[in-house]
Length: 189
Image 1 (cartoon, rainbow, N blue to C red):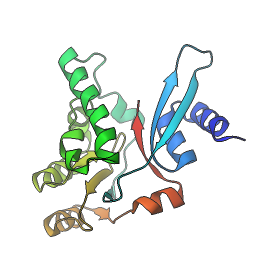
Image 2 (tube, helix red, strand yellow):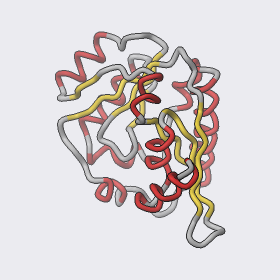
Image 3 (cartoon, rainbow, N blue to C red):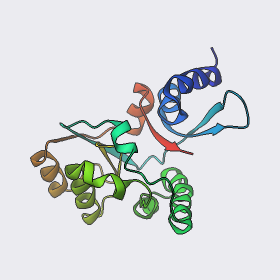
């Protein structure tokens, strides 16, 4: 099967292309759904991450259900919040590929992280703590994992200690490793 066929098939099983396409292509991807076709057509393109970016997934001991955290999202959002997140999604592509200095602004979110915070207080607290330390970070997907980005080879000692004290396993995942192992950062579109 071609990569396009694998993305289509995996996305049909998953219901959307973000995780499925990252699994097929490895590394960072931008994925989208064409709903003008029946069934929908799923597609993705790989991104070449800037070589200075280090990824630090923080995996908590607790788990959450995507279905449970999805219901925390409002059915409608303001025009202002939608525009804010749309600009951050575009900026994230630039930050990940060419301008890592823009990662802090690019990882700001108004549409899902604040709404899901009550369901995963340790993750929300860790996310805010990383950002206070100057480390761009996001909830990974629906959470509760946290993904930190850095141009330094290590996270600040305070961030590592906080993560360990709150049940997070934090380790660096190199960009080359992400591609080699087939896991990825999905930029949903």
